[in-house]
Length: 73
Image (cartoon, rainbow, N blue to C red):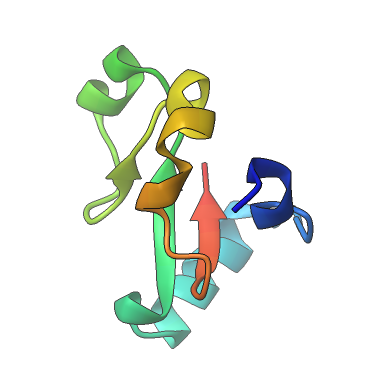
């Protein structure tokens, strides 16, 4: 899979919209990806998030299920 294809339909949402979506959909229906750096992730993160720093994302893209909705922060 080509990296840019995975994120070709990106929609920015507010924190409130994201919280509502996460509340209304089962956790198994989406992949939550934390793309911040290690120090930021260790300081606090959303439980269940997959940690892939943005700088590593092109090399680790295969860790993300392309058939699920992807939420990244």
